[in-house]
Amino acid sequence: MPLYLLLIVAIIQGLTEFLPVSSSGHLILLPGLTGLQDQGQFIDVAVHVGTLAAVILYFRKEVRDALIGTGRMLRGRLETDEAKLAFNLLVATIPLVLFGAFLHFSGLSDLLRSVKTIAWTMLIFGLVLYWADRAGPMQKTGSDWTVRDALIMGLWQAVALIPGTSRSGITITGARFLGYNRQGSATLAMLMSIPAIVASGTLLAMDVAADGNAQAFRDGAIAAFFAFLSALLALTLMMRLLRTVSFTPYVIYRVILGVILLIYAYG
Image (cartoon, rainbow, N blue to C red; front, side, top):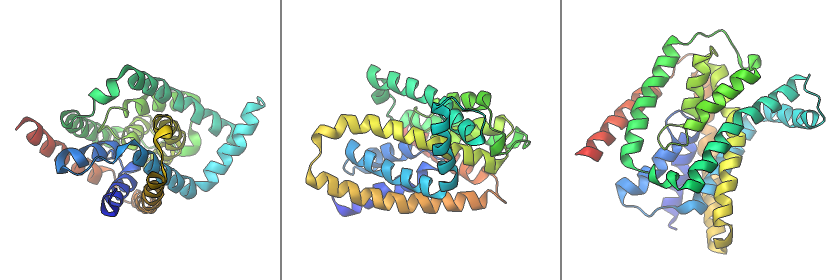
């Protein structure tokens, strides 16, 4: 695959994976609207690995706590904060895995990969994010996360398997409706992305494992590296901006893109 295309795919994935604007929607639109070569599932796995490394590095303290908590959880000790975090992440991931498996093995996931679907989800869930950000109270922080809230946010996250929805965007939306402040909502959404990316990446890797070759692995390594850099940049900027700025700029982008795509799809 040409180097310039690897860079485009990596940068798009990195910048949009953690911003509430839908990375999968942008990656589907790239070949569909530009006529460029489809990057294929192997590169999709690679850029997911890159963004996974970025979120683990940025939230390394929380990731360490979750790993410590996983060991305690497996021993039946759920009284510590670390174990509660690990258990909540597990609970939040279950709806995504179940719904994702259903879409994948039923073949419905391929039917949803269309410009019309992305246009409507980009627009509708952008407006829902605006509503949640304006109407949702800001009483809770990330440390207030409960099993009930984890399950509810997990159900919201499962909706993101529809292209154009945005995994981070819909999870933040659910958190804001539950009363978490903006930084707390974003932090929980990013932590939930780790098992989500691992689950989706594992499923994709199973599909492409037999087709790998030396050239593909070289391309994948390049894509993963640049996805890591762009994701780390996007994540750092978003978390800093949320101290003073709402989610409205992302909503405006989603609405504008959604309208443009609707005109394109139906015109």
